[in-house]
Structure formats: structure tokens, C-alpha cells
Length: 461
Image 1 (tube, helix red, strand yellow):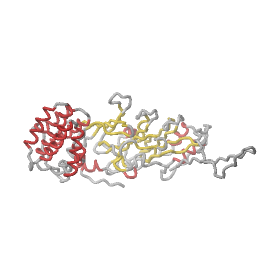
Image 2 (image 1 turned 90 degrees about the vertical axis):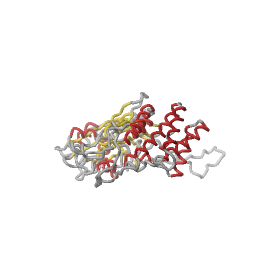
Image 3 (image 1 turned 120 degrees about the vertical axis):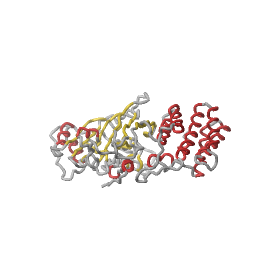
Image 4 (image 1 turned 180 degrees about the vertical axis):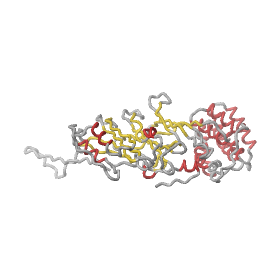
């Protein structure tokens, strides 16, 4: 079937992150492969001592013939649709009656308005791992001052004909006013990112609240999808916020494929994050975010940010460094959150969407000391951990702002002293946080503090 959900679900996209950052509300405007199972019959031999059973012999599924039709050339031209409909059936028929890949590319280039910029590509590459080349087609058009039009398709051969395995609708996504940047939309790469020898397909598209072409004054969100063959169908390998909605995005940026850890597999590295001057929330900073393959899908690996302005941002940097296993950087950032007088206190935004938390410095200082205690336990510096724990419980007694982190530290510390197992201590802390509904930083910083609403984030070991 046409697998729109697999490849980014463009009909149900949102701009929550950008709209929240900019303080605006966005206006959001399968061919199946049937494999027959022939029945088989067994005739009784005249010399057989046993009768033939009346029960039919179970059908043996036929192995699909992946032979492609011969290329003869001269296939009938593809007729243009008045409403820019999906051309999957026409493309499959064109190749099935002998059209070559070169001829197909020429045909697709003629379908758009000749004055429009276009991005048309046709390639043969095995993306299903059966040893036979498949056909990957991309045909995008960029009408001036309008949304993108066009699709991407993957075709395979079945019984001497081409069939479409999946198609992607890029319609109603935004383009760039600088037309040279439009080549960064649609299909970005076909590379093996999982180590199974079969290439995955990387796609991206952009959206703005008004869906107008992006210019130097516009903020936009770029969405990413990585699609791979799972043996029966194409599957989205990056997380989705909800089914059909991409979950990996970057504001005003792009991504590259880079082997960041030297394991021979490339990771998806996103760079961007800063809003245009005067257009958005001060928490939005330049950042680099890495996603890598983890057994059954891509997972978040690491993030780094630009220089912090606010105290909360130093805490954010430290949290990110812990996820990156950079404990020294995490320690330095938590210490900055506690002691650096140059960091600003958040006082709330003008619209009141992200109010300032009460007793912010006390909360962040207590949280930072709690996390520093965890760092020392992980590093094996137990004496330092004991000193930090003592300071935390002394400076934040019950009833004070930040006492929740002294409470959590006590749960972790007591369990760790008994079991010498930090994961056991974290398990107890998470159970305690859930039971007591302890999430003091949750909702304190709007969209950018979602993690603090998750109890498991309080003790990630």
C-alpha cells in the first residue's frame, strides 16, 4: 500500500516547537503486492497400498519472481495530471512496458511548468536487500510563492512488472526563496546506516507557520525521516512524536551524515536551533544533536549547545553532557549553574507563556548538587559524593525551596550505601518520585523543559 505514514506522514504535520518558540499559532491547512498461493494435488499411484487422503495438501506459497521487464525504449509518454496527482501508477506502467530510467527522468522533467524550479531524480539501487536493483524516483516542483508539489517513490519488480512499494507526498510543505536551497529538500541520501548491507533512505522537508517560501526573515522547522526495509515493508526508523508525525527536527538548520564514533556507521547530526534576531524565545540556542542506530531504530545520542545566557541553560548543558557521557563537562556546567553570577535569572516572557519559576536559583542549585552527587558516584569518587550529599541536605532542609532534591538524594544515597549499586538507588528514587509526584522543574520553562516531567530523567542510571 502507499505508505504515507512510514515516510513522514505529511498530512498530519505540526509546528508546535516553532510556534511555541515564536509565540505564534500555526495554520495547518496502497498498491499492495498480492502473492498467490497455488494449490497442489498428489495423484494416487495404482500400486500404492494406501489411499490418497481427501484433505487437500497445504498450499505452498509461491516465491515471488523479481525479474524486471526488459528495457526496450519508446514507452508511451506520461500525461500530466491537472491537479498534480500521484504519478505512481503511471511511473510503474512506463517502466513495465520497457521505458528506460533515462527516458523516465526526461518524462518527469516535462510534467512541471517549465518556468518552475524542479528536483527530479531516478536511480537504480537495491533498497530491499534481495540482490535486485530497485528504482528510487523523486519528482518535486517548486512553484514561486507556493508550497512544494511532488512525490518520491520506490518501485520493485514483481513477476516481470514494476510495482510501487511506497510513495511519499511532499505536497503542502514549504520551499526556500533562495532556490539553490531547495535541493536540500526531499530525498537526501541512500546509504547503509544500520550495518545490514541494505541502504536506508533519508528525507527532509521544511515547514513554516504560513507555508510561504523561507526567506532571510523567516524561521522554519526542518523534519527528518530515515526509512528502511524491514523484510516486508518500509518502516520509519527515527522516532515519531505520534504515528505519522516526525519526531526529529531542527529549527533553522539542517543535518549531515557523519561517523562520529568511528564504528563504521554514520550518524544523523543536526545543526541549527537559533531563531532570527528578535523573532523568538531567548531559550532557543544554537545546538548540535546526534542520532545513531541502536539495534531496532535510531536513538538520541548526544546534544551540545551554544554559550548559556540563563542559569537554566547551564543546567540544560550539564544534563546534555551527562547524556553524552562527558562527566567533566557536566560537572563544570552544574557548578556554573550554582556559582556563576554572570548567568541571568529567568523572569518570564512577555506573553506569559513561560512564567518564571518561584525560587529559581534555589531549585536549580539543589538540582545541580543532586546531579553532582550522581556524577561523583559514577566516577567512583565516593568521598566527594558524600561531601556534596551532606551540603545538599544541610542547605535544603524540609520545607525549603529545593528540598525535593535533598529528599531524592537521600533515597539514592541510602540505597547505594546498602547495595553499592547506583542503578538500584536510581530505581528507588524513580519509584519515590512517582509516588510523591515529584517533578519540580516540569513546566517551569515551557516546551524546553519537557524532560523534567519524566520521573526516570531524575536519575538516569
